[in-house]
Image 1 (tube, rainbow, N blue to C red):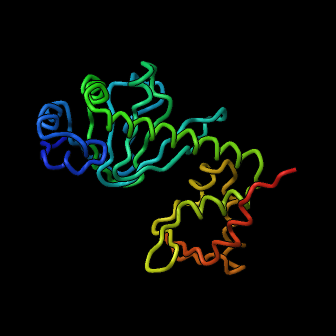
Image 2 (cartoon, helix red, strand yellow):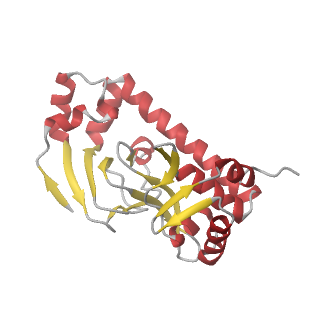
Image 3 (spheres, rainbow, N blue to C red):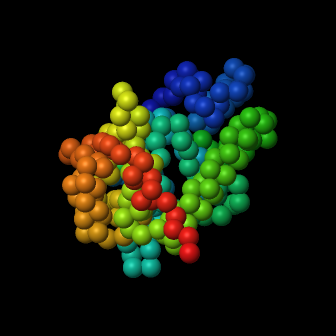
Length: 230
């Protein structure tokens, strides 16, 4: 982990602070640290005391928790302009999950007192935090639904749809997670994920090229990932 002097202009480009006045940004600046983490670093760990909020400026990280067998379950993957650590700052409880970088990351670290002052003095920032928490609750509900009502084939299809981004008229996952990480994200074995990905490729629904995946038939994948009701 490396710490660098913070360029004040960086704060102006962070959505969480988009409504802040120059005075508010100047007041916040002393409480913000600019940090860089190499790939594979733990930024926070479950069970630790919650002392700061982190905002990702560049790179990707995964939010994970250990299961009963000592394996890691990936809850989500987060990237630029997303933040984490706010839950413990709001309820005074230890970290509920760990965050590990998937690639080199550049982040801002904001102290607890400064974060709480942000919420007190800026309604727009508080609203962004609330909306982010609601988004995570919706994602958790969707994951629970998926685990309960959709088979592994459908879970893989749903995840690939969610990860794909439009690029020049195509839906592409530029840096697809390794199959082991996909398995941890959907609650399945790596072997089963490999079989599903191969079958989708053989049927022409997707095209896999190294770490890049082209989603060729979103409609078919959408049907396969829909909830089956009794």
